Amino acid sequence: MKKVIIFGLLLATGMISLDSLATNVVAGSLVDSLRTPETQHLLTNLKKIAAQGFMFGHHDDPVYGIGWEGDEGRSDVKSVCGDYPAVMSFDLGRIELGGDKNLDKVSFEKIRQEIVAQYNRGGMSSLSWHVDNPLTGKDSWDVSDTTVVASILPGGTNHGKFLGWLDAVADFMNSIETENGVKVPVLFRPWHEHTGSWFWWGAKLCTPSQYKALWKMTYNRMQEKGVNNLLYAYSPGTDPQNDAEYLERYPGDDIIDLLGFDCYQFDKQKYMDELDRSLTILTEVGKIHDKPIAVTETGFETIPDATWWTETLFPVISRYPICYVLVWRNAREKPNHYYAPYPGQVSAFDFVKFYEKPQTLFVKDVIHLYD
Ligand code: BMA
View 1 (cartoon, rainbow, N blue to C red):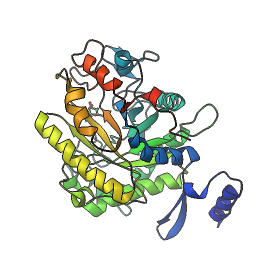
View 2: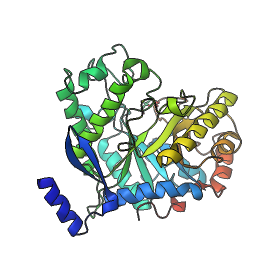
View 3: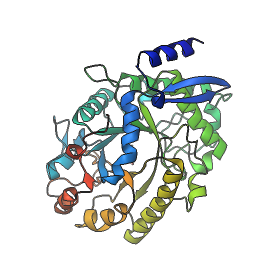
């Protein structure tokens, strides 16, 4: 009842609009699921952007790079082409433990600041969550026990503990605000690469209905905690061979806002074929379900191919209506673990050619994501 009154007040005072409202049934009761106007606009604009081109993204871009860490305003991508990526992603792994830093030793305070800075530039941020294994206490990659997902779902022995972990995520999401008190929209991308079996939520470690229940529990908890600045991304690997396989563990249109997949190059031909097949599937499913589509993680570690950007990546992805493509991090602590060029890197010149193409959008090219 209270919710209905508050909802009525918000509508009457114009603080929310009907099109920013989605309703959802949680455990038999009607829960109002609101998106802030900026978050709703982001979704609308992600659907439109493909007509113009696709945004380029990079994980942990402004935090560290090859040979540096924490330099104000620095970015390997910007050092090469003069502009920041339009999309930046960061990871919340270990926020559930209550510490200050994530699994890659980046402070959550820094992540919050960089998400706000990226919003102020007009760009977008995404958050993944390499969450520790709540049953064994080891990391995301601990697949030694196949009962982890079951143990955190309602009725499971770790359910209460896991709700606390979700609350830590919700508190962080709610805390990402500009100086003027605007909650910054973020694309949340938990439970990724679930069609493989290297994370404790992977295909061989839970059933499709348990995986969907995991998403539902995550989404519902965010709603219950008043998180209204998120869009949600679904991103399997390249295992699905057709639309039905892609959707086998899909939690539903009421939860998911963006469809993606993660795909890395090891063999060039295999990579191009996988990108092609997955993008064909995504284009169809995106159209049917009215969702924007993206290559949520990709790359060729150390980019040893001098023309990789314009001769491998671009020719495939530019044929599909994606809103963004994102490459993984330039680790400062792990030799030969980088996916974006830095000055002098063998593919840096070709990256500038990629940057100069009218279809590739960097932060200065992206003007209206939030209005
Ligand atoms: C992986 C690697 C790891 C890292 C993890 C989470 O792909 O980059 O070194 O800890 O992502 O960012």
